[in-house]
Picture 1 (cartoon, rainbow, N blue to C red):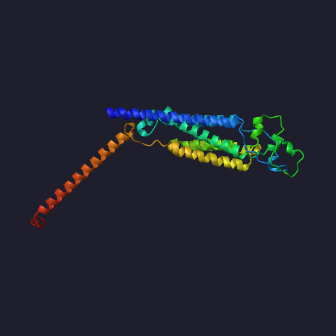
Picture 2 (tube, helix red, strand yellow):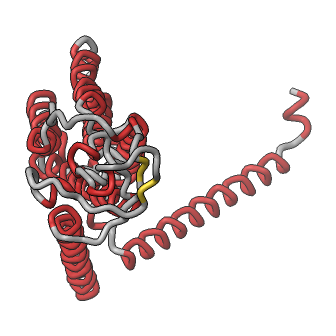
Picture 3 (cartoon, one colour):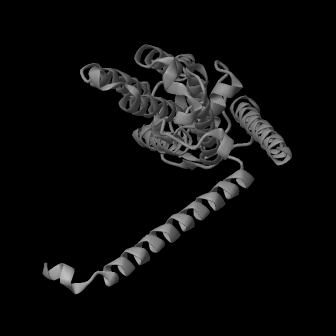
Amino acid sequence: MMMIKINEKVASQWRSSKLITSRNIYSIFIVLLAVLEFATVPQQHVGFYCNDPKISFKFMGDTVSMTSLIVGSVLMPILVMWITEFVCYSASNYEKSLGCAGSRTKQVWLWYGHYSVGIIALTFICDVIKTLIGEPRPHFLDTCKPREAENCTDEYVATYTCTNKEYSTWFISDSSKSFPSGHSALSMFTTVFIVWYLQNRLPDWTFFLKPWLQCMICLWTVVCSITRIGDNRHHWWDVLAGLMFGLAFSVLTITVSCRKFHLDRKVPEDYNDPVENEQINLNNKRQHSVKKLLETTVDVSESRELRNVKPSTWKE
C-alpha cells in the first residue's frame, strides 16, 4: 500500500510538471509570435526591378480580413466539435477506460488544445519565414513608394527607402512579407482538422450530411486562398506554399497529438505506473509459465496412459 501511494504521488507530480512545461512552451510561442508580428524586428529586404510587373499592382484591401480569419480559425473547430459530440454521443462514451479524457467537455477541450498548439506553431513558423525571406507583395510599389524607384526604368534596386506616409509603419513593413501566405496556411490547417474530425467522429447514419458539411468547410480554404491572389496581396506561389505548410502541420497535429480522433480502448490509469506495470508483467509471465507447465504435465500423463493400454484392447 505504501508503494502504491508513493507511486501515485510521483505520477501526480509528473503530470503537474508536464502541464506546467506545456503551458510555459505555449506562452513562449505566443510572446514570440506577438514580437514578430507587432514589434520592430529587423527583416530581410529583397531588392527589386523598377519595371517588374509582379509588384506593380494596386492595393485593393482584403476580402477576408485578418479579423475574419482569426475568428473563423478560433470558433469553427470548437463549435463543430461541441455540436457533434453532444448531438451524436452520450456521456457514457467518454470513460477513461475507453481512452477518453473522462468526460465530453474534457475530450473536446483536449482536442481543441492540440489544435491551438498546432495553429500557433504554424503561425509562428510562417512569420519567421516571412521575416527571413522578405519577398515583396504584388502591391509593394504602390504601398511602399520607394524613393529610388521614382526616376528608375530597368535598374535593379538593392536598397530602398519607403516614402509613403498614408499607411502605418507596420503596414509598409508588411508589404515586404509576401512568402508564404498566412491566410492560406491557417485556413488549410483549420479545414483539414475539421474535415478529418467529421470523417472519424460523425456516425454512419449521417452519411448524407457528412460530405455536405465537409464541402462547406473546404470552401473556407478556397475563398481565403483565391481572394489573396485576387486582392493582389500574394503571388500564386505564396498561396501554394501556405497551403502546403497548413496541410503538413494539420496532418502532424491530427495523427500525433489527436490520434486521428480515435477513442480506442486502453489500459486503465491504475496500470499506468511503471512499477505496477512491471509487477503486472511479472504476474502475467508467471501465469503463462504455470499454464504451460500444467499443459506439459497433462500431455505426459496422457502419453503414459496410452503406453499402458494392452494390444488386445485394440484388436477387440
